[in-house]
Image (tube, rainbow, N blue to C red; front, top):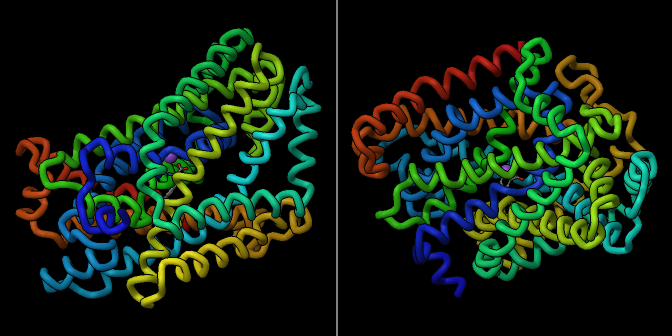
Length: 455
Ligand code: PHE
Ligand code: NA
């Protein structure tokens, strides 16, 4: 029941891993990772991204789970408790506030992309992709982007699915489904990788992903890699904090965080291995942008045996992965409305969901009618960015690293060493390593990347 989910602990470490993986694995892995890798020149970007996952993402995931578990309440309340107990400055609470605001902004466009995934279930199922050329597949995609009403329909459907689950507190059931659906998604990705091997351009794809060419990496690219490490691991948004509050004391935070990070990274790399050989085999542009997977994967589904079936299943699973992530984006905002404003679950869900949905319309229009509108274009940092690009950039590249920085500072410099040691319960060597990273490496890395890009 809702009560046992809320007040009890996860029935097992497995339940926590599933929920956290459900949140982590999503459009970030399959849609975003390949396209930003393509835009940022491949190997060197991937290497920086992997370093960011290990040196920044993983330690912060541990810190977030730790804060949630030691506060044992909603993120905002956990932070407040820890702040009050330690007699710290109340402004630290803003860490959770920035996170929630970011979650709200992200969900607005995440739902639009989730809608693309839903629409491709039908595109694959009707056999429309069979034998299509790269050009024809590109036209299907631009047809979708060029039609605000279609996009609105799919965005509405996706957001409704998310609100339905959050409003009824059904997360538990959905998370159990992750047990079957995540491995299935993994297998389907492997099948597409298998197809990619037959294109004769697999080596080229592998080289693009794993052969670092630092001349193609920009400082802006480093910021994108850092921001994506937060985005893909669901960090900086109070999500892992919320999940951590249900985690039982005898579970190792470090081991669990490693499992989640490795699975998330595995899915992203597999998606890259599936997509780039198809890009090169068809003379497509790796830097094609947000449409990359919708211009490449359909080609594979149109050519491989059983392609319509496999493609349909793939987009169903992608939708599902996006759905579980989107739910975890809406959940903290809804909990905050319930707790802070005393609103009922239904009202909170409708209030937050409908506002997000409305904001999503701006992203939809920026893909067509407003494609030339660049509201902050006068600042060099935001040059050429549409509303959709801005929402993505401001959340992933500014708000999340900032919230992550605050989490690192709070855990590393505000909480006591004893509390941290007790929560993490690691060997003293591993603890010292984490402590050094969270106190120095993470904050300095985030600060340096920020300063380079903003000034
Ligand atoms: N991690 C999710 C993804 O990669 C996105 C997400 C971010 C979900 C933050 C929840 C919170 O798609
Ligand atoms: Na992810």
